[in-house]
Length: 465
Image (cartoon, rainbow, N blue to C red; front, side, top):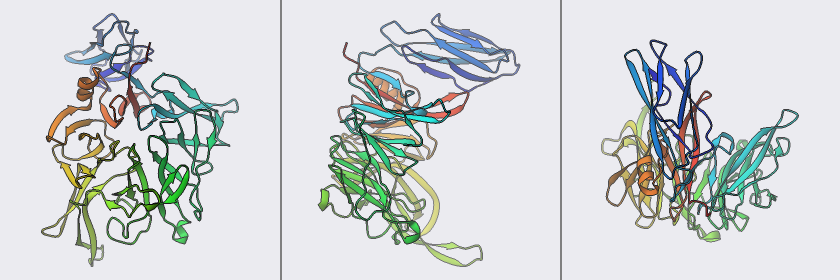
């Protein structure tokens, strides 16, 4: 017997039916829900089970199971339902937003994204949407037709409620505030293309991102940008790229600490993704340093072409990251990344690539590499050194929590959340935690008839009665 899901978690109220795919031999099977508040029904062809739950009017979380039996084969589907509002925290999926994708402001005041609907002429309309986590109030603007703004991805939101969303029609982005006023971020003088903001400081004084100075055919490069009170400047570039070569693509600033003091970015050269950081001094910001410079090793190895001739290739053992913008702790003390090892520094021989979660302390300038979980990556880290790790390299759905101070495993993401907030969440990983720990943003894999998707969720304090 194969079931598409053997554990499912429901909110305390307002749940949609949940569909589980079934493959069983023999095809006939029986189902038995374990509680009166739970209902499970087979489809006429037996290929799915639809699970529904009543609202949870009790003061606590509850759980039961559904027994599925086909001949001698049997399975148990665990069903967990949260209380309507936990006294410590609220858990919510971001299903309000298109594709379930949302961004959280640095101090956890707002989450934002957009909602897509179909207009009367069958064209898409997109409405920027902001939820105030303190009050539960939802603000929606527009909706805007694609012919005006073709909104594609929310990138950042400040604690003042200024939301940045990519514009696939005009290039660059729009920024929209809590009154519905739209602002178009400007590039520095001399840039030919509109820029994109990737992240902001909590107070909105600093925005960071990137722009391209001129066409690639004319030798244009991505340039890391810093906006101070809305005024853009270029951040300095390193002399060479991650592999100590001349730049061909450039550098993108990806994230900034909530206090605005530390900025990190990537050397966006092919698949190198070398991670670097700046100490933000505004117009006087100095050249960046490589994240994990204490463990960085550069060496030349021999590679062989198809015709049998050899050539030199530069390998790097160092810290990398991709297009993620929440990998710095709120004060900038820690930066999360992935340590990639490409060669043996003693033999100068290329090896099969190894990747481990890694965390760099900008104060001590020392790196902690976590090899306990095998292939893994650092996703986020708190100021006090609690690290959040994703397993594997791509398409991950499981997260681990690790104490960098003691070198100990603190369990899966769901275990840690349960201990800290007293609630049970689906399997997933954490992407951001506000400095005071009251707001959390994470990702879980969800299964539906449309397939497997990644959906954001958040934890926020309970609303005041």
